[in-house]
Image (cartoon, rainbow, N blue to C red; front, side, top):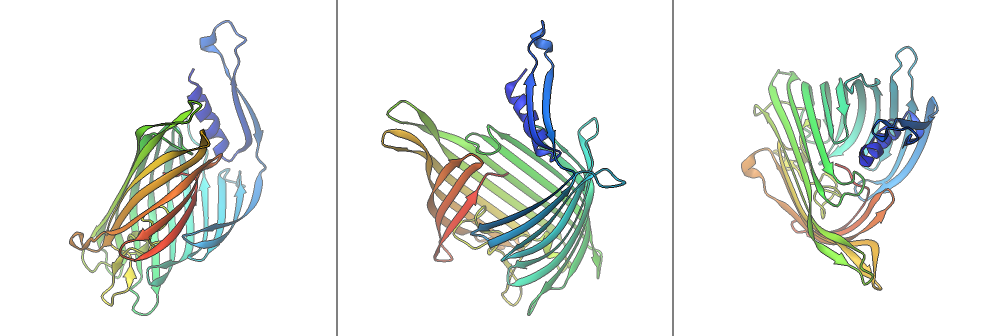
Length: 367
């Protein structure tokens, strides 16, 4: 038996949403320890649940969310999670329905959402329908689905609205030593979609997005009592491309924007993009993002603390042509606190091209 595998199985059961508490143990009273059964102690979640969640982020300001969960939809038996989210940048209503996994771990899902969001210099009303299958294992997530997109941009000089139908495949591998607060390992994610616009003309397009992140040990930091942790260099890269005929009326939700707490610090949320003919900020067809960050544990009073210092350089670019990609660079420093739910991060970054300082706050790790 592998203790980490047992803990991962316990975490997967707990995160399924069907249980409020999960505890897996080995029954070691038998004569053959290699055949010891796994005993699961669980407390089932309520059939329905309503959660109110206030919050705040430096990307989008104050936030309010309301989430309703139904663990067994009448007549279908699927699990449904519906959410209303309101913040400075986004008003969103979505619902996702998921089936129980089959013997091979695959499950059916369906999702629908409507959204009103600030996108560049415009306000975009959009809708999305998605249905397909997904599989989640200890390290790898896979999904394939059919997706319909609609987007209508509002504002002076706004580009035309767009609709599209696409077939998509996503693969994400997470090979970190911890999924909540990693200190070593790497992750890679690949999304690929092939589709067609629906009006006024049908134009084929291909959309791809690749993400990568790795943690590299950079020497050990020890306190006076001999306790220590490794310093780290964190490398992160992301690239996206949307290939289509010039003039194709694509939904803006398929285009790229970047900038903010989790991408290019020193710039506002999704403030790095392409420009329309009139010079207004909008989504672009190509995106490139990169980051280098040094994280070092802090020793205070001769003792190792749960705090770390950081130095970083972020860069990102978005454009409608590869030749027009010009990096926007952010540099800065920050601190991390190793909280029970993941790192609490506070960074002060200077946007070299924007010529301004920005404070970025973030809780937790995700890839």
